[in-house]
Length: 185
Ligand SMILES: [Zn+2]
Image (tube, rainbow, N blue to C red):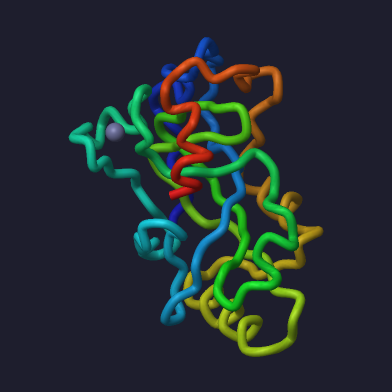
């Protein structure tokens, strides 16, 4: 698997009120559903072939304009790791880290990106079937399965966090509420 090429366009050109000149992959955090040995998006079940996902839009935006400013399209990632407890008690939810690149729309708690790639997955606390399934799935993808406490440091080998100063304090677009409405795609 090759490293993503950093965005060739300003990755935050459409962010609400901020337009930093960044050309690096950005680190983000999210969860997936583990189904049939593969990681899939939690809400729409989209598969992540080879651990990667390129955004698509149900509202008609072309791939080149994703994530669109006034839309909910894009691959979602939070700035901070999801709490360890967010997936621990479930049989099939797992947390992990991605890098996001291409066009990026910055929101208060996270971002919507054009492309994303899984760079690390969190090991479940339990030693049972879920843990074995995570290890098998990550071996297939060629990404490390790491303890929650190591997730951020492992992820930072692949990209940078979006500096807090570059995150909008208030999201100005209608897409602001997509976090509550849809959750990460
Ligand atoms: Zn859209």
